[in-house]
Structures are given as C-alpha cells and as structure tokens.
Length: 240
Image (cartoon, rainbow, N blue to C red; front, side):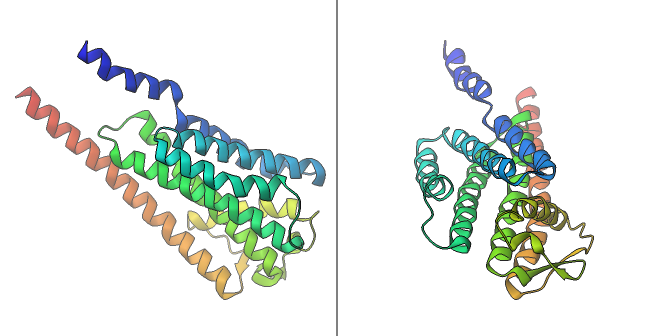
C-alpha cells in the first residue's frame, strides 16, 4: 500500500504534464508569429498566443500553492493591461502590456527552475522543462526589446535604417516577428548583424540576453549530468 501511495503523486503529475502544455503554447506562438499578415487578425493572434503561454505558466505553477497564488497575482495586471481600457497614451499602454507579460513569464521561468532543481532523476519532463525555460527566456527578451523599441524607435536599426515597425500600432504586428527573430538570434549568439542595437539600453539588453543564453545552456547541461551521475551512484550502492 505504501508503494501505491508513493506512486500516486507521480502518476498525477504525469497526467498534468504542465511542461508539455507550456512547450506546445510557446511553439505555437513562435511558429504563427512570422505568418501574421493582417493587422487586426494579427493583434488577436498575438494576444491569444501570449495568454496561452501565460495560462500554461499558471498551470505549471499550480503544482505548489504558493507559486499558484503568485502567478495569479501577476496575471491580474497583465489581464487588465491587455484586455482592459487604455489608461495612458499609446506608448505607455503598449509598454505596460509588454512589461506585465514579461513579469509573468519571468516568474514562470523561476517556477520551472525550481522544479528542475528539485528533480532527482533525468526524465522526459526534466528535458521538456529545460526547453520551456530556454524558450521563455527568448520570449521575455523579445518583449523587453519590443518595449525598448516602442519607447525609442531609434534604439534599433534594420540594415542601418530606423525600424519602422514601431512607428504605428498597425506596423507593430510586424515588429513582433522581427523582435522574436532578433531575440533568438541573440540568445543563441548567432547574430546575423542585420538588426543593430543603437542605444545604451538596447545594447545592455542584447548583451545580457547573449550571456544568459550561454550560461543557461552550460548550467542546464551541468545539472542534467549531475543528476544522472548522482542517480548512477545511488543505483550502484543499492546493487551492492
């Protein structure tokens, strides 16, 4: 009976598969962003995609009550900013939307990191959680880059010219895809050089993202190796 009781939480967690849903939501957002061609439809696709990621993050946080409360608390300003009435001018409202979503995703990263730190065995959920966190970092920096570009349209240049995507609400739909591309090429330190940060804030964000991407991969792989080695030692001791 005691063995069955120990298995029940594991079975329940496998059925929830919180990291799987988060991965699906992120991949759907990343894949559909470059395909947006209509400003009106694109705006709703953007909102639905981001909220799918946010809700998947809340679902992942539900594994612990404290995390769930914090996640729901962070969701409230995001819901108000994206779906509520405008409060400030166009720039202020859009920046508020982006930063509120970024705050939720940053906390989701914390939730995933906490779960991965507690893992005692390398499993499918561990690998998916690691991928989730990496993609979330890219999306968070996409939101931060976009907010920076909206505040100062001269913060980034495309082929040496100011980026026109952030000069009007209609063009900002294209800006989502552009900044998503820039964020992930920076995160992976690929950097084609077509988009260039021009201001101090833009360069700082770009540098921090590049360093974060490299450190994350190194630390995550080291953690997986550590878990695997520890598990191998434990199994060897038990076999003796």
